[in-house]
Image (cartoon, rainbow, N blue to C red):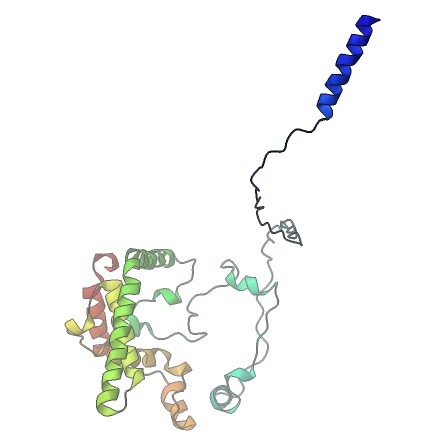
Length: 278
């Protein structure tokens, strides 16, 4: 009995000691900063799996003639030119391509792009030294890939000169315009802009300043004249319509009249282009 009473008394003292609260110690107040999080309420839609469409085999359909005609000789083409350039205008006719038909234009196995840079009209090769230039070559022709590779090589090798030469060239342009405005009260932007563009291209791609060569400042004028002889039959210059149709739309301008101007441009680019373009 004595041992049991001693055990009970010791157990009570232990329970009482556990019930006594320990003296609270002052603790510093802590602030917990929770990170700010954002969530998207809408989950991104899962893209549809790509549809594998097997390329259609080329059909062996016969080539059909486009229906219709040009009307009476001389009179029919003349009326069509009047309607296209002056009476109806170029925007009267619209051509629509469906979503399925449009990619066919980029399929070189179905669409031939030979001599079609300016539509159905191709200038005489006498205006380009007897050569068909890259714009008129079909991708299937061997020289097309070689010339395009040469152009990309030139663009890649001179890429670091584009921004500096553009900045320098057009800074000169606007400074000259400001100077002319201060002296004369007016300035011609068109001619100055053509000169700045020609200088920029020559300095950027060839590292040559045209003003320091025999070409001088004649480059833009020679190029404009050369473009007129190339694209005259499809241009509208603002002349009286009958006079304009008779001079540039009915007959080709003879390349002999621009032979010397073309030779000056050729000599400049040949001397400035360096070895890659020769």
